Image (cartoon, rainbow over all chains, first blue to last red; front, side):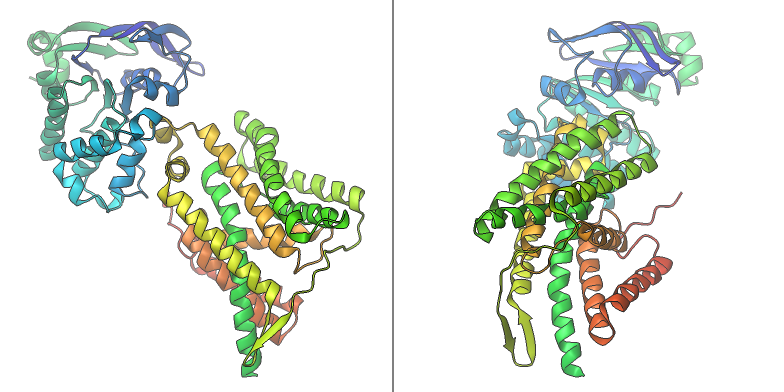
Length: 234
Length: 289
């Protein structure tokens, strides 16, 4: 579904990604693990068009992405949930969800998509008139994920959905990811909480200093002594 | 004495309504494009000259106004294309942006002076003055007030009840997040500057029966709307609306009891006092760094 080949990204003189290659198949949940500054967020931003690579290719369902602007890439069916959700804090929950269906093809399906989002996160229907500023961290993450579903995507990029949340909420947020996975969406998840993320993963990539260092199934990563020592802390 | 106070209050409210529309456009542009439109009042001045010229050519005032409104919308679009886009593309710092737009005011004022000369000119339309009880009302002011409120209501509807309005508000809050929703910020900037241009045209139409125009007419209105925008809290539409009435009433009451020159000073002093107490403006959000 998504194929990335030899991707290089630079911020001015700083080289952030080196020859990154990865692929995702329809219906898979792929997790990227790695420490802070490894380039995970940069990779997601490059896929969604917020950053432009210096070289390499990104192909999604036969279409090349690497020179397209972000607002066109959403239209092709990739939704990006940035770290912290990046909600429109001065808009209500309902308005945030409505912006999610801004795309021409998504507008007609707005009522159906809204129903589906409310079914997934019933609390959002109760809170629909509230400004998102007044929500708790977990609820905000529901809005962020719900908003990304409103564009009717095929692939969802999730950047650290559990960051900055209380440990009790972290499990719930990863439960949301599990729910949308069960709905058949393809997911590319970046997560610091390695142990929990690996339980969700079909396949895992390890990123260090802008390079993909390892690739394997969730199970294999859980048993890998290096991963255990460096990322799970067992 | 009481009569004078009452009259000046009513006129202050009427003036405040027009100021609210005036400041709304500048506020919208600041909120979305993140640029302080220093040539805003000058665009109004230009619009008034266009109306004047069309009327000189024999056109009825109302037709002249209706033609000039879309022309100023086009001017807003061209400013985005020729002035603001290059600044954004070059990632110019705020001072450079401010200087570029301040430079534009000089271009506008001098171009007008070359074409129309430095004399005061005006559209000669006489509206009656009516009096209700002891209150005297200039019909031209009442038309401007009601017209401004209707346009403001239209803008409120546009921003709150359409996808375009939602896209404008989203872009104002978080451009990057808006892009991830499929919104093209470039396009939203063009739309916003065109709306801002249309609003300057509308104000030019309301002003034409009230004021005579000269090349430096716009400067004081740029200043007034900037003051209102800052007083209300930059980017805050409701704050700007309230601040417009505050400035309108303070100016009008002070003018009635002193003179118009003193009134400007009183309004500025009121502004300075508020900003000293609430640096973020009346309804602005405090930014903690």
